[in-house]
Amino acid sequence: MTRLIAPFLSLFLSLVVAEPDPAFSFGARLLDPISTGIETANTTGSQHVGIRRESFAFEDRQLNVSWWYPATSEDNAVPFTNAGGLVGEAVLDAPLDSSNGPYPLIIFSPGVASWDDSYYFFLQNLASHGYVVVSIKHLDATKAEAKANPLALAQAKKYQEEQNGSYAVWLTYSWWFRTTHEGLKYRPQEIGFVIDKAIQAASDKLSPFHGNIDAENIGMAGHSLGGFYTLLVGAGMAVNCDYPMTLKEQNLLNPILTEVNFCAWPESRNFSSPTDLHDSRIKAAISLAPPVFIKPSEITRGANSIKTPLMILTGNDPYFESTLKPQRQLYDGAAGPKYKVEINATNHMLIADTYQYNDELTANVPAYLKSNFSAKADVYMTYSSAFFDMYLKKDDSKKEVLQSSSSPLVAALDYSE
Ligand SMILES: *[C@@H]1O[C@H](CO)[C@@H](O)[C@H](O)[C@H]1NC(C)=O
Ligand SMILES: *[C@@H]1O[C@H](CO)[C@@H](O)[C@H](O)[C@H]1NC(C)=O
Ligand SMILES: *[C@@H]1O[C@H](CO)[C@@H](O)[C@H](O)[C@H]1NC(C)=O
Ligand SMILES: *[C@@H]1O[C@H](CO)[C@@H](O)[C@H](O)[C@H]1NC(C)=O
Ligand SMILES: *[C@@H]1O[C@H](CO)[C@@H](O)[C@H](O)[C@H]1NC(C)=O
Ligand SMILES: *[C@@H]1O[C@H](CO)[C@@H](O)[C@H](O)[C@H]1NC(C)=O
Image (cartoon, rainbow, N blue to C red; front, side, top):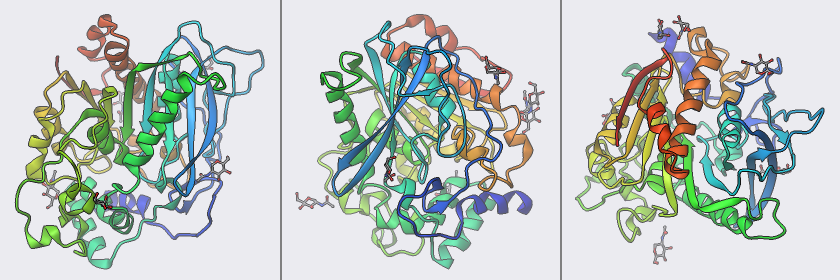
């Protein structure tokens, strides 16, 4: 067991080199791009894909995003290589293909420390099915450090042994999560700002997306920390704070950050209602491998508020994936329509292909978790595109796809319409 535990935590622990704009990183940890120039999984949709990078000014900083969109093909077009060295099919600044537009919009929020272009196969694939996708480079993508006090690190190790991986990573990053109040200081704000900008682009004559975004049909997807915020912002999970908290839960300086109640952060105390963070413009949500930062005994009640169509899409590896138990509670509690798909022998980073195959970051991840990549990617692609087709494009024929196992690698499939 220890053989498995050590490499998992080592993914997140690192020496930190302070440099403002690294060429490629996992948070503040500098990384060399993949050395082998590997190709990611091919798209399954019928349209070609373009990618456009954009920098917005937000608060006191630059907020970068990538747009992934249906594009016309050009002879000899060279596919985009992302910062991490991964190659797919997207072509930088390719002309938009408006033939099937306007396209529903999907906002993508990555995991903590992850870059906007690091989910190459997943994002290009949605675009190939006729979506305009905007992925966000959140503040943590260059700033988050895996830093924690020794007590927290010791507890993280215990959690890992107990197959409580979400709590282990939460503690490993406790300096960042404490500083940013579990992300409440910037994640909802950045997501809301990017949704506003994307909707504005739909009617801005100067934008390349003018007239090609269907702003009435907006979806959201997110991975890990972004998967948690997808639950709050996209799906409408409630944060109920109407109960007395223990002193431990209220102590913001508690060295074991996982014991601090989400409701103790000043932002939660300010919520006008338990679903204050919910953005009702979002009509469908996919949460990829979410950890859950609210108190376990409150998850079911929080999930009871979820009325937006929701899919939880995750790997099932007990050591290297987010914890399945709270995901089951979320699924059970949500009103529906809802889906839960688990992919066999799949870990936390596979969906973030650029990190999964990075020579340094995941060098110690066992081979079985890296094997069968395109078959595993295919499961992610099949269910995510069918789900958004069903709920953003109202294509009821996709019900059949959503209700059947697409591959022997589908380890579990639950649904309720
Ligand atoms: C945003 O993108 C620009 C242009 O590529 C780059 O120079 C800058 O460092 C990026 N900023 C952040 C915060 O990632
Ligand atoms: C992706 O498509 C290319 C070109 O069509 C093909 O050469 C390659 O084998 C495909 N890759 C996979 C993993 O199917
Ligand atoms: C909470 O609300 C008060 C009053 O509107 C405001 O002054 C304060 O900045 C808010 N605090 C946070 C952390 O949002
Ligand atoms: C993880 O640990 C926390 C704190 O002990 C506990 O409340 C939670 O139920 C654990 N989760 C799982 C899935 O074991
Ligand atoms: C599922 O993964 C396990 C390894 O965890 C492997 O032994 C098994 O063959 C896999 N099943 C399928 C259908 O791929
Ligand atoms: C990989 O896929 C093959 C063929 O489907 C299967 O037999 C094998 O068990 C899979 N391995 C894992 C680790 O999932």
